[in-house]
Length: 493
Image (tube, rainbow, N blue to C red):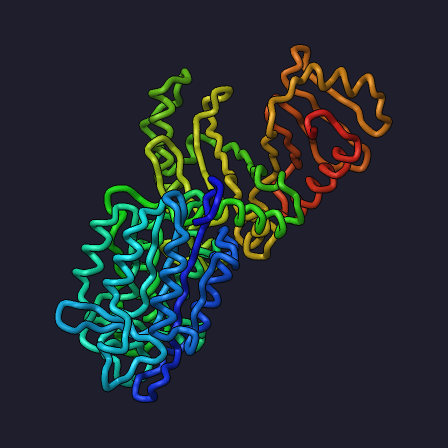
């Protein structure tokens, strides 16, 4: 066993694309699947030196039984083990077997590896987390074009018993035992494994929950995406049902991808971390009587109360729906989002939202407290998780000439009085200030900057007189931000 208290992550990856016996059908793309999965796991803390990879002639029966046992012997209770097998599986009586490179078609049972023995060895070491990924639950070991096959369906009961008895284990299988596991020539991968790898690479946002990949989120993603890819790949209907046993009562964390996603976002946005805190916004004032729900028998409210706010929200129901429908359709077309990529909700308080994988859109209508003859429409894009997307043509197609203001949520609260005192003491030639008596805000004028720059306790905003192109908004804000950075202003430290 390894020394020290440091948690270690181990992986065993076995891929049988070809067998020594020509009578046993090849398993297309098994090698590519294993290699890609290995790289994805390495990004997630499975060091290459802690990965056992056996491909084709390396994966003989003796090697599989001996070398897998050696890895298992190293495990300590806190460690993590992932086991992946791509090849053929079959059952004989109540026992399951997986093929090795030297499995003989004439003596399959005697020359293959008993799956139960491997599972038993793995289960004996109660590691912190054990996850199995099996791409061998298929229907025929003989040649069937386009599929991976097994001889005599694997008995699912053995896997279910294993996961039930080993509370720390979870097992994923490419399909039910009576089904086939399909591969895609265009993807150059098994379809199920393509989506598994995609999830571990952080390229499947729908498989993640706040950057975390769990057993349940992965399984739900596979159940949804594998059938979709099958429909795109094959003209004839194909059935493949990814399944999982274990982790039913307590979800198992498979990977924390938050740092990988953050690194990717930072790289895509040129290291401009602040861009994730940007908010596009615009307010538009309209007559209350312009709302489609307004009736001639209604009277303009004489006071601003919760009741009048609710009344106005009801009058704006149809406009809210139309706004959400319009933006929903535009997002689908511009970003090529699928139905499952967009979550739309229209609340009864005059608010509607569309949550996308990249950002959120919000529209809100409310009675103007300063003029009860008016309503104020507020539209925003916030919660930006993919900064690279806001400078794309797709974003511009949807939101050009919608917003007039960019706001930046500051990481720490700014003491406005202290900020004013610091700038005035510095006497910076290109910067002048304007502020109210109580110092609740500070307007900053910078030479060469167009738009109104305002600093409040937790926010910096740059506003233009009218809604403008998103690219122009971003350009002016980035220019302003760089100027502010060059002056080392207090709220940037």
